[in-house]
View 1 (spheres, rainbow, N blue to C red):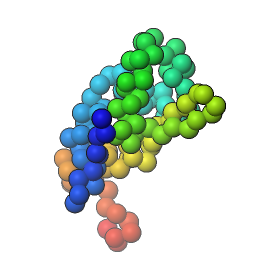
View 2 (cartoon, rainbow, N blue to C red):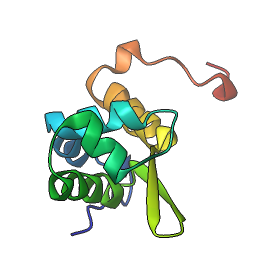
View 3 (tube, helix red, strand yellow):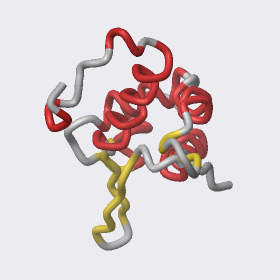
Length: 109
């Protein structure tokens, strides 16, 4: 299942982003993967859930573009795609709280 996080005209779809991050396990995975690379077994140890559960949630996050991966032999390491999270959060701000959005400095705002 691939979750397209973009709409043709507006960039990241905040409804899809909200659904993906609404799960507490995925939120914890995102927290753990921020600023570091971890393999599935590391994540299983941190979360105390089964390997299939971690793999399922990583698949959802990966399909949404919210985690990146790299292979090292047979192991796969994951990290949070902070750029995509930032884009999605910015879209939420522009949509739901436009008066709180910081003006784009490049636009002279």
